[in-house]
Image (tube, rainbow, N blue to C red; front, side, top):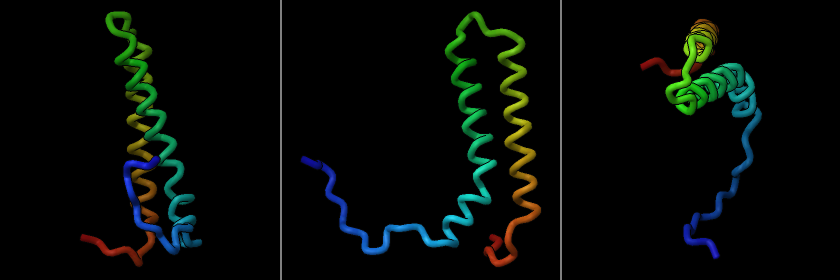
Length: 82
């Protein structure tokens, strides 16, 4: 029994444009997942946190920022800019 009723969606398949956007942003998603993993490991280490744990987070943050900057520079011009 499902306690959350959701209306049926007629066209719930992603369009080719949606898939292209996901593919374009996948490196950023992967980098953010790596950062999340590093942060979880850091938090779980407790008092045993080492300099290597801190360095792993800094490297992951740098990677996220680098990839986000690259995506921003080659973003499609058809998107609305606020």
